[in-house]
Image 1: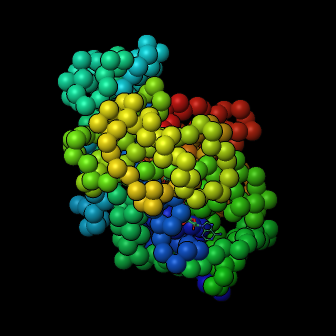
Image 2 (image 1 turned 120 degrees about the vertical axis):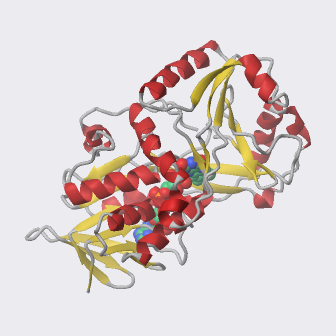
Length: 386
Ligand SMILES: Cc1cc2nc3c(=O)[nH]c(=O)nc-3n(C[C@H](O)[C@H](O)[C@H](O)COP(=O)(O)OP(=O)(O)OC[C@H]3O[C@@H](n4cnc5c(N)ncnc54)[C@H](O)[C@@H]3O)c2cc1C
């Protein structure tokens, strides 16, 4: 029997950040259990790596206000790179409704202390990127400290630092069951490698989180939803210094990646399920939207074999579920990031570490994101989901 102070189930970026924050706070006997032979085979390795503070709910903005400066100083703090590129996010509005929405978000973001965001007029956007079809762009919002990170590097950086300072990572090890000892409140975590005794378990199993919660009889409202990304071949007819650009009329968005671009669009016809195969029919759907907003993309070459699919982990209100289970003390959730788990992993690590070690956190009002909000009808809707 192995013993650990904290067991983190799943070894993606969320567990890695929690491990880092726990160890950095002095809790060193942390065990991370990952079923794959390597980290990053879940959603983390499939992510687009976008990081932004341009959200519509205060709690998401707060999570970003911790996370983005953290990424900016990642290498200085941890000694490993995360490849933060502050190239910005540019939302392009094509209706009066979008303008009203962006302005309301902008006011919230500024009031909460975000300094780098500004509203733009349509002409400014046309001037910045004449390659965009701009006839219907009424304005937009741009935040220069938004941008991209390399999710794989960030995950490895967190985990390596944690391992260097006392944490343990078991790869190729599946958690198969969890039992709680009613007498002393501790847990026995059954894995394919050994039985582990602990007083604290954290569910970090991404899109598979509901199956882990089920092991303790908990119904966790986290559903897998496929998202597909299409990288282009090298392409130089659009600047590589560009931000993530979002066409609000269709939801199509893209960013520079290597010598080409990474194209994304969330198909509203997608249905929940563990689908991780790439659908070749998606290429035509996305290229139509790409060429509509960026006419030079008419000539862009893509290789379907380089496109990929991964899973978002959706909750009913598109916000994560963070904190201790109300029914099973000692069992914590770090789940349901609804597509924002890379950008919010630094804040999540800090929040979970605070809650586990001290029972409270100053970073956010943790009750906003707790599991009980669903039963108590306190869901908070985020509309700026990409
Ligand atoms: C196409 C795509 C684009 C995205 N773009 C962005 C973006 O631009 N910005 C952003 O912030 N986020 C983005 N995301 C979302 C982001 O990738 C996720 O929110 C994030 O990676 C979640 O991290 P995680 O550690 O919770 O989950 P994961 O990385 O999925 O890790 C969970 C791990 O748990 C393991 N596991 C599951 N069950 C068990 C078990 N029984 N025993 C042991 N291990 C187990 C899995 O193998 C997996 O490695 C994107 C996601 C996709 C799919």
